[in-house]
Length: 471
Image (cartoon, rainbow, N blue to C red; front, side):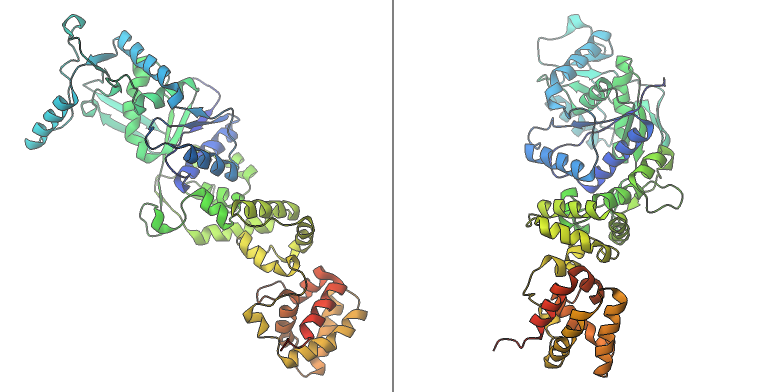
């Protein structure tokens, strides 16, 4: 194959959401194009008019955008190119690489039923392949490509290796139906050729299609792209990934609060590896990605591994960028946006929030203390820590905090001193303090919360909590 700039493509059918398998295929194409300094193109294969919907197309575009997979140029609609596909079918006919077939659907089905009854091959051999034009009837016809009858076709695949198919197993594929509409197999090849696609990276469930699509490339004298058929994704139980394994649509994962960077990292590791590296950045993935690193065996989707990577990505993200990502998550999941003040407060508190959070909702749960205002309404679990004894201790603590230097060592010493005076351990005061400051049982350390909230807010919250509950 001559040296051409690398061009890859992602070509989903808009019949539903962008699922995890499709997202991984898109990612591999995007990574390889960016690795090679080439182009990553997007084609919407919307020829199935009964099942294709504008809503599904929009879901695919949104999913790719959330994942951060930017495509070059405008997305191409396969349906809008139907005239071009039909033109190529007629050119194949003119070249003698295809022929008119006048066999009707009833005749073809009758042949197949008879073959099944005799337990013979149902591969249809059209009687019209070598009939001269002068003997053609004045009737509707399909155009079929002339498949070789002898020898072998070898699919040279960068992932699967050389895959050999006997040519006597190939049928004379219809490329243009009798109603004048092109078939999907033709459309894919014409579009890939016209878009300059050099590498076809797709699921290995398309492997058998490659041999039939090569018939069109050969008939037109076009250069065959590099094939790379990647393994499918299975669930943790080893079965093909399906709805029973949990969220499948990329938008569902986004709405659940998983960082896009973590999803990119994790999907890249599903079926591809670079040594023992698990956590890596986009820049590293682009630098390292190569087709040779793709494995043949199916990958298993493991939510625990995703969660582990997700936590690492949240911890490694710049605080301001993380606040922006959380705003995007709130928008995607239909929740109320943070006010400018809340964004500023969240940014200030991020140092004590992001180290152990696996998702944005987990982080926001820990951040409740800084996002809520007075009076803090404790939930049921934390309210249980505010009994009469603990309230009196909090009331006693407040004067000490008013005059203390506002740093961790001093705050720990002050709280520890009050705990000692009451013959209890500092840890015993953590529950009431957490309840007073955050109203939640899950939060950062009480001293981190004090430092983030500042003296005035901390003392005010403790005084609120120290008051006896209304009768």
